Image (cartoon, rainbow, N blue to C red):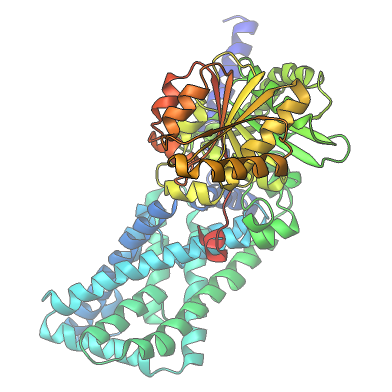
Length: 603
């Protein structure tokens, strides 16, 4: 073999080795110093990668995974009371099978509340996820665990699973916990929380399943042997007493479950997570996420999440800074910088009607599911570099307008979440999307579609273009905020491209014609369109009226219906025949509605 062939072979071997030694998330699969041992930094990187999976998971998958875990705790309760009954209450023999339910949960990858004290908290401590996002994760997982525990307790109480001696042992074990003082329960639960969160840390330091099983078994064996308490086990035991009519539910929750819950949380978060966090170095963040510490949430975002900006830092997101102050920002998500130029042109024309306006183009590189984590840091930087080169053409195009240019690149499986996060963080006034953009197909199916409408971060326009021509615009007018947005956009295009605007208002019958004229005249004056052509149609048929008036128009600018726009586009239920019949470009407008504090916090 020649020297060149030797070097090529060595390079290929090294490439294969690097691929094997780095997981899909970019976290290390083997130790850098000793192959079968990880440093504290490397363990932390592995935990952050796992936490990223959990914090971006949908509520449905989190809940049902947690429900399975809660029901699996029934295995622990069943075996513990059965062994207690069959061994005469021997403290060691009766605890031998106690860890089996936990092995099933942790090795199976199910969501257990006490296990969740470590990975999501690690991400939150890095300011890569907000405190509201962490609380949402905890609430969903705890709800699932308790639901599963409820089903398990019902099965034990009514399913004839326990023998008479086993039922007696179950009552005795549960009553012992109820009779303990809240202070004692809290301290013992804190030690249990320390054990569980410590198991998670050690588990990510292990490289094979056998080691993980051994760690989980020995650690959870310490809970019954030490007389400690785990919240999901305690909840299951408490409900067993309730189902047997030996305890009031409220008393069981306040005197038993809540002290254990608080103790487990404090033990997991304070005694393990923070201690392990501060023993690692700042290099952990550079390794864990693209672009390192500069990617962290601001302090306000970290504390308040989606209320003030982002609640989560996307895996890959590169942004160019704006030059000068921005008073009006139009966000334009695109999938292909080579073909989406007309969308950007429209955004620039709308923005040009405002002082200190910016057009922010977001190149969304969509990947299926969580394949984004398959890219290592070199590949990530290459993706951003290639995207930046493609966006050069957009920057040149925007440079021809009197607006500020900003660009971003996002690589994610969470397209809409990332777009909305950018819109909130940048305080965008308007988001402009293409009707047929692949982004629509990428909305996560496990999120309620109505949630998207409630959480619009800005005004929204969706363009379905034929040959984009804004010279003659028809605006159907109704008494709604969506029509107000349509009017504002029409006024902007009249200013920038000299568009001729026609306003159409449809009423039910000739008796309402005069009132319709008065409404439309006042509306036009109020929205700066007093010189527009006004048409009042008294047929009562909105779609037919739009079709008649739009025949000689180049663009239809229509507000959303009361059912919203995004939800219907994603579901494919936006079926207006007039939209399919027209040759004109169609621009649909939706203005975000108000949502409650609980909606914003928990979705």
